[in-house]
Length: 314
Image (cartoon, rainbow, N blue to C red):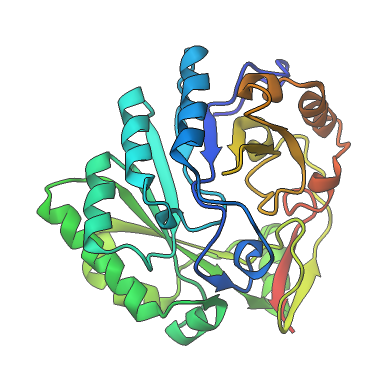
């Protein structure tokens, strides 16, 4: 749901992102979280309660809460409790993204019974071996078996939630990216790789598959034998993550959007200011207003939304 761009700043966006774990147990080669230093903790109960208290005090209920910001949510033992509290508040949609390595039967049942609405699970590359080369820290078959088990638990509980999405990142060669870009004027991948479709053939009707090229995260430093391909700047006047989301890190810092995995542009901290004061602050408001004028802040200038660029094979 796009905001009315005449009303900047708006009171508060209806998509709230909360980082439940500032670290990850994988070291995926396309992701800053696992490959570069990060000292942010898992989200504490006191921090979560502080966020909820602020929302309740302003009688504001977000439409969507995403409990993810690049780390592994299942590292947080309180994750299911957070989801349950949010659903009891009336949040329409809760979502997490996971590598599934910790998605055992007990955690699966907890997430389902807590009311999780969307579960995104990441597998990369064109085959299991490439997945393991990209996603350092866990083998495909072990983690994929956890997903199959999750589906069985959900069926045994007689529940339809959560919706399951298999997300697949591809590190393509330069020629492939140029061909796709020239055809569609943007880089998209039409189909998930065969190995995922075949492995989850029994569960195919229970899940959705999406596949996309590996973007370059703002602040990311190249890893291994990877190169970067740049396309012409888009120079948009609108960005959904900037105008429609509010992102809180596990240490209380508020960052510009979901693309700032490294926490480069901090706009405030919820222990010093309210989330509403931060959102409507002069600095934050000016960033949004200037974006409409195609005058981008330092983070937006190197973001894939403004300047499309992707990791590619050398």
